[in-house]
Image 1 (cartoon, chains in turn orange, yellow, green, cyan):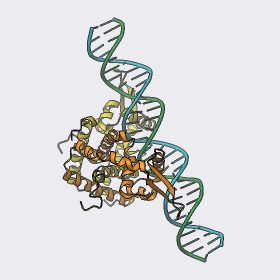
Image 2 (image 1 turned 90 degrees about the vertical axis):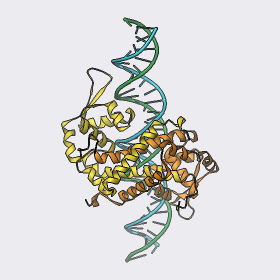
Image 3 (image 1 turned 180 degrees about the vertical axis):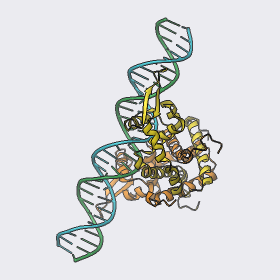
Image 4 (image 1 turned 180 degrees about the horizontal axis):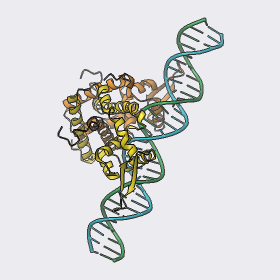
Length: 155
Length: 155
DNA sequence: CAGAAATCGATTGGGCGCAACATGATAGGG
DNA sequence: CCCTATCATGTTGCGCCCAATCGATTTCTG
């Protein structure tokens, strides 16, 4: 309440949503520097993370895991395929489905990505317990917001 | 540590940065619905917020306030100018500078934006004190990350 | 004061992110 | 069986986001 804009109804919430927006872009920028050597963008890195963790996945499963739709994933996966990091194959049992797998080259990239997370947390200057609390709070927000369609906001 | 990927060094930090990334996109999506009536995107809304709060600003000042560079702001401001919500004029005293001001139509939009913040906070289901704590934590992260160039990460 | 350096803003190019639409495949109800 | 609805993925179009670069000032400096 000590801020100059404390009496402006349009400024306060802005502080929260804007903080989120600014922090997200700042961290993505840091990832950009750290991932540059690997030739990955942050969303591409996320896709590789999921593949490293869970093995072969369909596009649909990737979409659910990352909250990204096919309009984003299709060209992104095409680029990663072009870079030789993953393969895309139509499922034999259901021709609608495309299965995505890391190639050997994609698997080998994993070792070079091991150090990235620690460096990011260090740069953010966050104690682990606070990072965990933050992660939980943000997860709850995402869940709440994605549940609600604007029509049903009840206050 | 109860998660299945608790022993995976690439999964834990991902939880934090990814939560941030996902939450930011979820909130932007909610803004998209609420701002659709006003004909604004979320970044455009942010520009109008700053103009409403602070009056005439240079592009440079907008850039600092929103942490956005001219590659983003130039076309965005052109669109808002085309929509009749603001004007751009070269400064008389320094021909390099462009001064941005809300038009009357832009000012009038403010009233219709008044209700948006509350609806967002409601949809996010956040008590005000937790929202404030979150905002401060995120602001600190942004400051830390923007201060550090990747070369200088010391751990 | 002339030339160099810094500043402001716009432009270009590549990659996200999402809505809307298109295509082909599968599943269910007559 | 068809016929329709649903589903998985892809494409298009628009706007954001940033790195790199450019052109036009201004400011610094010898």
